[in-house]
Length: 281
Image (cartoon, rainbow, N blue to C red):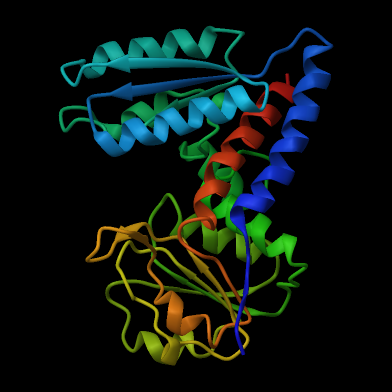
């Protein structure tokens, strides 16, 4: 059996077309959805991510404001800038690209963003809303994973989902989203004993630890759905995920490739969150 690939690029195009349509409807009412993106420092990867986010906004009919600051920017100055953007009615979403320079407390910066404009879904109010099932912004990467499961018509109720990784950005919110859909969820991490024994029970596996080949073919139940959130480089410098794709593809029922899987969905869900922030006004 060869797994069916869940194409993140194709699904993103469908969702972004809907964003464009809804953004056009808002513009007819005099509202242009706006996203402010703040980049501090010269991190090469962050520069690429920011450029892709700004381009996605423009392509979908959203307004974007890109602010680049040197890594000497003080925490106080950054917090002041966020405070001003919180009051700017033309900006509906605020994103501060992580990581930040070491002298800046990232959590304080995240908490300074108005929950109404927290389109990354990292604010403690967003996390609380997700945990309690209240309306709020879901973190973009796990939100994209949920959309991928939805796109294949996968019924999560009663299924066993295993999340490998417990980060605040992916692992923990991913588990909560799966719980909301009535899956039975197990979270595995660096202290988990006998990871293979757990993953072999899983109907759905989400690999999100940033470690190559954390999941291999012998760890996957035939027919399972495997979502690969990892972003790594192999010996040749090519982009790869956390999953041994060539092996697992021969066992799984569905699998996401890297690149072209979860990655495009992350930016797409950022657009969706920004649009919804504008619609809520």
